Image 1 (cartoon, one colour):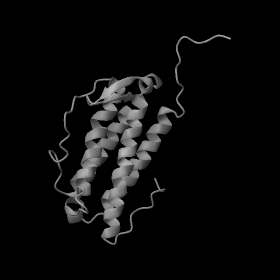
Image 2 (cartoon, helix red, strand yellow; image 1 turned 90 degrees about the horizontal axis):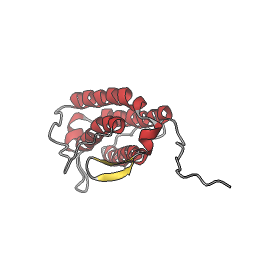
Image 3 (cartoon, rainbow, N blue to C red; image 1 turned 180 degrees about the vertical axis):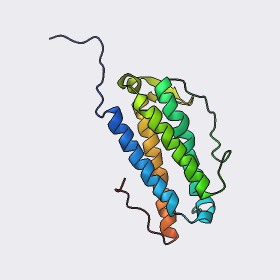
Length: 166
C-alpha cells in the first residue's frame, strides 16, 4: 500500500457553485436592506447593537477587498476596520455600493482557483486560515448580521424576506 507524500484536499464544491451560494446570500441581504425604512436603516438599534447600515458596510468592507485578495494572495493589513468611514447617507447610495461590490465579486470570484482555496494565508493581516475557510467566514458573518437585521425588522413590525429565498 502506497502512502502519498503530499495530500491535496479536494474541494467539495466548485468555484462556480460557491460563488452562486455566496451571491444568493448577498441577494437576500440586499432585499433586507431594501425592507428597512430609510431612517431606521441608519438609526435603529436594539440592545446596543449597531444599526444595520453599519453592519452592511462591514460586509462590504470585507467582501470588496476580500474577493480580490482570495484571487491574488495579496492581503491588506487592517488593524481595525472603520465601517463608518465611507458610510453612505442614503439607502439608495448604500444599495449602489452593495451592487458595485456584487459586480466585483462576479468579476473576481470565478478567478479563485482550487489551488487558491487550499492555500493557508493571513487574511487582512490577522486571520490565518485556508482561503476556503476565509470565504466561508465571509458568508457566515453575513448570515449572522442578517439575523440581527431580521430582529430589527420584526421589532419595527416589518416582515423580513424569507431566509430560504436566496
